[in-house]
Amino acid sequence: MKQEPRDFSRGRFRKKTLQAPDSKSKSDMLRLFIELSQIARREGILALESRINEIEDPFFRSGLSMVIDGMDPEFVSDVLDAELQVMEHRHSEYMSIFVQAGTYAPTLGVLGAVVGLIAALGNLSDIEKLGHAISGAFVATILGIFTGYVLWLPIANKLKIMSQLEIAQKRMIIEGILSLQAGDSPTAIEAKLMIFIPQSERDSIKSERGE
Image 1: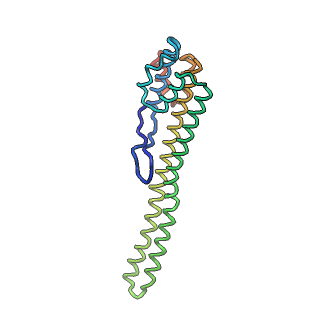
Image 2: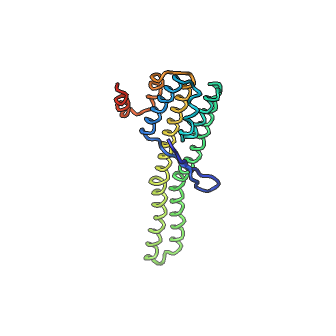
Image 3: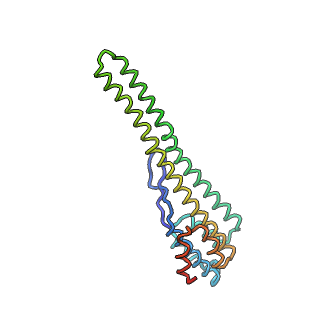
């Protein structure tokens, strides 16, 4: 659950990066919500205050704090949804950097080749030098295509996938927090949150619970 996101800010790459949540972290989160629901049903929602400092995810901790403070469920949902939307927008902005780089790189490569050919055709008297100049001009095209389709666009696609995984994890947190606030039973919370767990992990979770 501990994350160290990276982001681009003022031209610098800061220590805030997208980290794709794995199935283990989601499974651990499911177990945590079940445990919290058991405590809440036994001792009341205020009893969860002692567990807040154990939660390392700021998003999770913020939402649970609002629930413990007795804020309206609709308010809690609106705040968490707004924070999630801001995060999605931020991720989209960062991904667009690599998408644009991948889009423009091949065009710039072709432009470099054209400029190189113009320079090469300026000296047609020396055939040997002409051949080297033309081959050098096409290197720009190769570099443009390579960086665009092998480097920048795959990075953009990976960031997109990681963003979707992180957003799914945040939605799982929102659903769990609202279920805690509603006083749902541990069984009901497990059923709600299990949809966020990969199918391959569900059987192992159920076997741990003796089902």
